[in-house]
Amino acid sequence: MIGKDRVQSLAASEQGEAVRVRRHLHAHPELSFEEERTAAFIANELRASGIDVEVDDTTHGIVALVAGHDGNGPVVALRADMDALPIREDEQHECRSTNEGVMHACGHDGHVACVLTAGRILSALGDELPGTVKLIFQPAEERAPGGALGMIESGVLDSPRVGRVYGQHVNTELPAGTVGFASGLFMASADEIYLEVRGRGGHAAKPHQTTDPVVIASTLIVTLQQIVSRNADPNTPSVLSFGRLIADGAANVIPDTVEIAGTFRTVDDRWRETALERIRETTNSLARMLGGEAEVRIVRGYPSLINDPQTTASARARAVDYLGEQRVVDLGPEMWAEDFAYYGRHRPSCFYNLGVRNEERSIVHPVHTSRFDLDEDALQVGSGLLAWIAIGALESESD
Image (cartoon, rainbow, N blue to C red):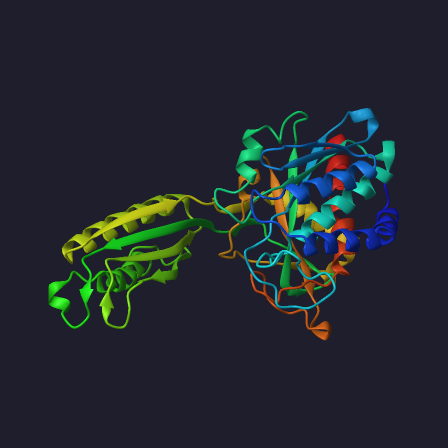
């Protein structure tokens, strides 16, 4: 049996390297499916640690194996996402993004640093490791349909066959050094809604000579909200939000078209299908009724993320053992979405949160914002705990 003191000691000794990796990635972010330099850097880091690596030259996905017992025994997987967001970074710290307009604003640089460092910790255990840990570095979590599905379809959970999958995500609402778990339903499904409303533009002083797509679009946005407020079961969380409205006219010009973009999220698969169809039907019929027409494009996103109860309970117990009860909290469902959900549809999985908030250092800004940051001290907790959870899973499968 491998003791936690040993894992904690290895995590402490690797902390400097974890910070170096995170800072390099933060300074050189790449968007979804463009992670070529990111993948090359990660692969080189793994090879330098003596870890076997395969890189998909098309998608830039990486699979690495850390094997004990001569490659025999059970297999579990640790997953990290590695893409950045199209956000201009406002912070002026030493590892600020050098790719203007692109930023690791969701903590994926930290995710990679933790999984890579966990791999180094596990590799240092050699033949004492009671099985194999597959390290998955996945592209394009931020862009539907995501990178997870493609990697799964390419066999990432097979050869050797993975029994369980674990992942973690930074959380700026949890203090650094704490972790949070949710059993069962954890995150919502997410689909992108794109509407183009077409009318007949003209002079704003003569609206009777136009078919005003701005009015049609405005009516649509208000009416579509009733799909959630009047049709969804009140006990089923649902969100329909529109964040983009482009009516490219002028103060005195009614345009020909209006573009609308939004997101629909829920936690029930059957209601998801019903709601998407009602969005389509309502948009088309209302636009026609008001004299225009509409085109509806729905980009299917990720399913709801459901943590396997047994896998989550075991991981939570390992976290309590590793960190202490006071540093492990229970979380409820959120309307965030994650393509880690696909792993959970194929294998028992657990996705949990790693606290990175530090109010004394003003590290308080949420993800997907230009001032997001994380407390790098949390990397030692994140890498060590991932390794400790993986070891526990392998030991339980080996009994």
